[in-house]
Every structure is written in C-alpha cells, then in structure tokens.
Length: 336
Image (cartoon, rainbow, N blue to C red; front, top):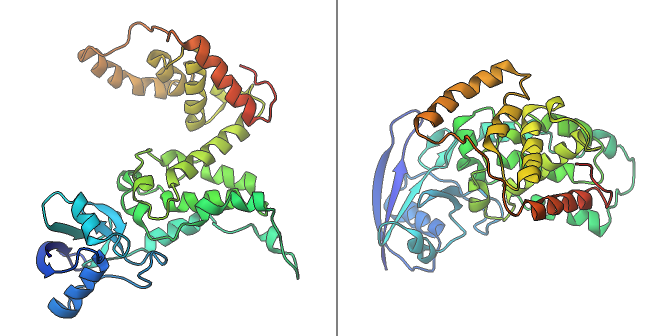
C-alpha cells in the first residue's frame, strides 16, 4: 500500500522543516522498517537511531503521530489506525531534549537526571566479599515492573512537568528510584526518601498528567511508581498518624489535608483546603497572600464557594479511608 511519511528534519540550533516521503510498503512492517527504506533507497542523509529492532534497547524512540513511541514496536497498519490524516504518518524527534540532527536528540540531560537519584543499591549493601546476596521470590517480585524500564526516553519526552520545570528529574529517574527503594538489599531508604521529597526536582514536581504511563512501551507505569514513593514519604513523615499538618512540608501537608478533609466531609471543602495547605492554618502569611489573586478571580467569575455541603456518603467514606489506613499500617487502628 502507499503511505505518506511526514518527517520533521532539523540540524543543531537551526530551524526545523518538514519533509515528505511516499512509500509503497507492506502495512505489516514497522515504522522502523519504513525509515530504513527511506534511508537506504530514497535519502541517505536522514538521521535516526536504531539497534536491536526488538523493543529491547530503546534506541529508536521518537515521536510518531504526536506521541513518543518506539519505531520498531508498532506496525504501519497500527500507526495508520491512530493517524489524524488518512494514509499519513508523522514522525518527529523526542521532546524535552535538544535536537542534534533530524530524529537524533541529545540525551545528556536525561542521563544526568537519572544519575541524580543514585539508582544503585547502596554501597554498604554491596560490600559482601565473595558470595551472593539472595532475595526471596516475594521481594524480587516487587522489582519486576519498575525493572522493565529500558531507558528509551519516551516518558521523559512527553513529560509535561519537564516542559515547564527544568529542575524536575523526570519520570524515568523516579521509576528507577522506586526500583532501588523497593529493593530489600538497599540500606539507604531514609536518605533516599529525604532526597526524593523535593517540590521542584523530586516526586512533588510531577503534575500527574499520565503521559508517562500512556507512552511507556514496557508498561513500567512511571506515574504509579512516583505515587508509591509519595506514599512512602508520607508514611515516614506521619508514621504515628498524630503529626499535625502544620508541621509538614507543603507537599506532605497537601496530601494529609486532602485526606483529612475527605474524611470530614466526604469530599474537599475548597475553602479550608487553600487555607490549610498554602496558609498553613494562618501561620504562613506569604502563602495566604498568594491566595488573594486566586480568590479575586474566583469571585469575579462567580465561582467562590461561600458554602460547603458535605457529601451524603461521608458516613461511608470515612470508615473506608480508615480501613485502608489501618490495612497499610498492618492492621493497627489509625487515629483520626
């Protein structure tokens, strides 16, 4: 069948342009097969990365039809089914990384951010001399999903948080961070949680857009791993469940206030939420001041919540939350 490939081409620090190639190609072949045909028979100047061709190495990650994907993974037929224009597939370099040439991007920042989370089992745990450091099948199973990451860069490419916040390390790094955090052999859990508990670069920099989960070719679900790290931080900071929200960092206070308000009213009382999180219960005057422009805009648009109506199901919701909290604490009753 005849397929049109529109490829975004660019050289370092130069404006990009779109180039169109029309191929007669079998729909069962992959996008990488099509790129090879263009490279070998039509335009030898086209630059892209490839290696294994078996969804193992992650080298051929690029944006296909507007999302990050591996060129070797989906067939042309599958990509056409998702395309906006009939018989047309658009291809561009990955996002959030400088373009070196055509579909080849500079991944230096990607690797630096991975190293920033120290994604290795702690040094004391590795000082074993001769022998093996065995794990139980149950402990090893905890690492399987996060361990499937092939570091292709797809999640990093489509991460909205990276786009607006250059300090954010990226979902790939935090997925690897969770893999080490869940490793029973690691001996630096406390230090790791402190390092990941950061508003800008750590887990609280995530905007929860779900893009990383959507584009991950290996079903690592980076957002889920980030949420698990958040849960571990929250449990560590409030492990006796008596710590006041005012004593916590803003990200942790955000989570605890949200849970407590849902327990109180069945859903969130927006009036109290801002005051308790940003204003820290009238303790943070700068935070309170930041609420004034938002409140003014809400008033101007008639959206300021003067009243709060508790959920009719709050009597059911509170026991459910407490049951989950109790289960996560190993069966001990949680104080409200």
